[in-house]
Length: 272
Ligand code: KIV
Ligand code: NA
Image (tube, rainbow, N blue to C red; front, side):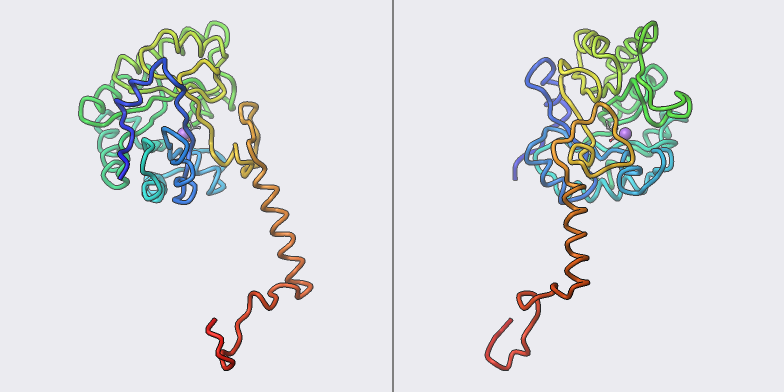
């Protein structure tokens, strides 16, 4: 069995070849992503992408664990990271540890991700000192969408200083990498130069130490909204729509199923 990448392996890639990261929520897509990527994230975006929730706020620990288990079965080489959902880590470092330990024990993931910078410094330090590698996530943190008043670019103008401070705080607390979401490219560049841990950009900068996208977004399978930072590498949603339309037409016209898809009674020696 091929050994999986570890958080120290990822940390060692700072300043090296770009880290290739994608989300996955199911076993079949995890198998595909695992063939090409360094990190597979079971993101809480699963709530919006697969469950039709209006935001990530309604995602539960049980949902993350169930999708984490599904993805685990498809991963051999990539580092598996599972998102901590809203409400599962913010109260105290102890609450975060209890729930992160459950995620790790029940999914077999090697690390968790949580949102927040300076405010999560104590919690990240507590987790990392107790055997739980943490990927941080700063800039636009979607679980705080109500506080931000929308999915807006973070860290423009004087706010840049706060995001830089967040990056330094999570690195100092022991995070092994940091997602920078929807921040100006110049700020992402400055953070990438400043902090000693790999930065993983989404709507950030090509100079980040790695990139991540939601896999359904880059495959063109999620249409509820379309952020500027999503490049569609395929249009699988359109392909699926055309296929379903063709199926419907063939059922209505009795073209499907044809002889190729039905069974004989077997009396003429045929086995199928
Ligand atoms: O939930 C998610 O998919 C994420 C990535 C976009 C970073 O947090
Ligand atoms: Na997330």
